Length: 425
Image (cartoon, rainbow, N blue to C red; front, side, top):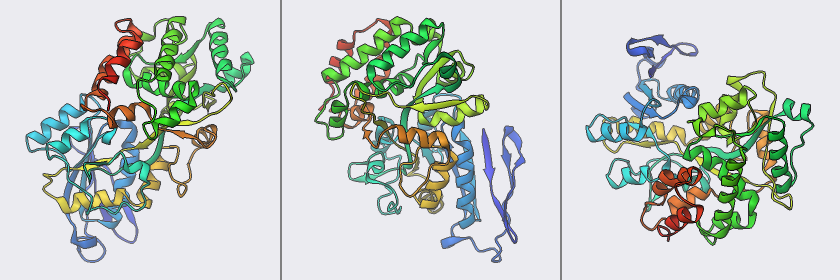
């Protein structure tokens, strides 16, 4: 997927999209209303951006449009690389000298951006971008080795339990107030012949269920993840994962959940009524609504045994700048725009996301419901601890490759946790 967005300036700004070769869309950039000035700071030319998933396409288009109001003579070309191994494609393009000017990464949440930084592929933006609007917590995703290598988004990418409100009402099921009640609910839903939780047999999908289960199982442990006084392989982490393995064996994820191969299939099972709940990323709310606009669904956070709730998550990472960009001025200008309050507001609200900033209001009722369900508490992602405190840098890779082996019976929980523990500081 490839699109170009360029602006023509008359009395008002119009973004025009027209078909172009290769299945994309484009528009030609006209002169600005100041007689052909190259825009703010004289920046002009063209840049290319890579994004990794189509769910971000509308938001990216809005960001580009906002950017081009300030830089009308910068042509912006973007590609959505969602149909293959994103990082392999990115590394190949960078090594061949044909890489994009800006590209999405997970930031420090995985080893990919650090690997790119170590190979001098990411520009150090420390003195080039104004990060004053971005929170310190979000900046953790962008910062390593005393340099800043990306621009985070101020969405709180948290995990939540989406539930079918009509199904709950019809069966007289209540939103649980304790962890025991949640487990009882799982059993009741299964007895009714309905899959309790839609879940994909995928390491990331399972992670986004595991982390809120862990937060409910032991909130004190999750508080300790913030400063690493809790270790990734402590007893609480082992016991919560074993709890999920037990749930899988009970059929709480469905009798054929190993055949649910990705997040799209997971969402489909929920939106078609095959499952009563879907434990997933808060960002999936928009896709759920798109799949079934008539679905009456809400969200809650799994409570601890004493009723405590808290949201697990991090800010989302955005774009890094290619250190070999042939139009560094325009690439850095785009990165600066992304860091602005205007662009951050566009991204958070167009995503229907939970806001990570008190200055940006969530745009949807479901995002507000998710935010309120956390009771004002937030916890650090367990997986983020793996990537931040791995002494070898391999813990996240091991987690990704071996997490599902626990559910498949190829490894025990203790074997996985011992393997991870050996990699940690």
